[in-house]
Image 1 (tube, rainbow, N blue to C red):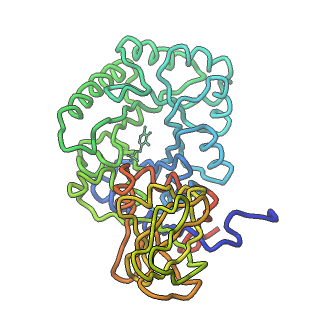
Image 2 (cartoon, protein in one colour):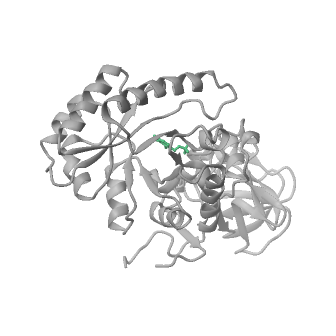
Length: 383
Ligand SMILES: *Cc1c(COP(=O)(O)O)cnc(C)c1O
């Protein structure tokens, strides 16, 4: 063990409820036919929750696949003992195709040149599993010409180094109320799938649904869904949250403890810039978390609050790199628990609330809380 491990001594921590992850996987499965595969998407260290722990919990709950963004994320999961199929959703460098092959990691392809170059790094004993990515309106990665699709399918069929394992696309607006753009994307995708199948015959995996599509339009999926944000118990968009037919259980909560409590006189200033002044005699508590942990300064604006003894307390003054101050309803002992995300008694601060405070989406909040904050898992993992 390292002499120093992040969070070994500090009083700020994240709790991850792996049972919530499992329940969310089961909830989305219950919406779908039993032959639909669930790919648990754990890129960016499981949206900040811990990729390995989340992957294990999701697989135990019935997820058949794991999705990541980077080859290194996939390799790390293999090294941690994850054996189910893993798909890298982003583009890997063709010169690393042999690494994917060696670790039995499926990859995304959408360029003819990529296939040509990757081939030179591969052996032909165990073909590299390829999922063809079609850009049907996301404008990010993916082929956009039917001819490219046909050329690539033919190359994959011809070369022993490749196996056509899947075809997929990604939706740009599945979390919005309007459906015309989504319907247009699906129509393009159907055309691509039909063309590919005419040449290749059956393709094992055809997939397009992210969390929003898999929850809002179950039954229209092909045979796999890619389940990311909602596996963590978060809605893809606050605006269309009411359209989600299951109750999601948030897995992450964030806590700290008061390290200093003091009574200040009226007009005492708090923190950098002296932007906050006590309007009367106030109890001020100091909490050891700041923007150095990814707890951004903007949390002090737009009515940012924390929970102490089940009561909402405002964050006062500017958030520093490692500490911030809150106004307490009364004198409280040093060591009192402070909840920044999560529940205390009847009160709850959700990631949705924090996202709205920061004028952003739910995804950004857990991803931004960095590894200076230790993650604790419960129920304790079976090793
Ligand atoms: C991240 C990602 C997903 C998961 O999306 P959520 O909205 O988090 O469910 C699915 N597919 C691709 C290609 C992705 O990059």
